[in-house]
Length: 98
Image (cartoon, rainbow, N blue to C red):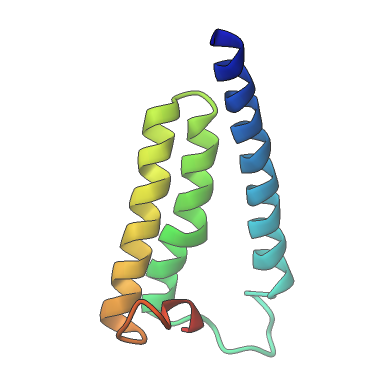
């Protein structure tokens, strides 16, 4: 049983590394500081604070403190979608299209 728990923990850490890498590639690839694009609005900066920044912080924190990191990650995602619901598209189905 303990071996299974160790394997699940290692798999979760590997997935978090892959997820963080993918998020950083999207963040850099989109060119958020590209001079030819409009800068993010204040509400978009707040949303960026929770996703991807809050999610990345939560995943890194979970390597040491699993419960705290998991709570930070889930809380960041929930807050991101609530802010997007209030300020963005108005429904959860189209929340990612904002």
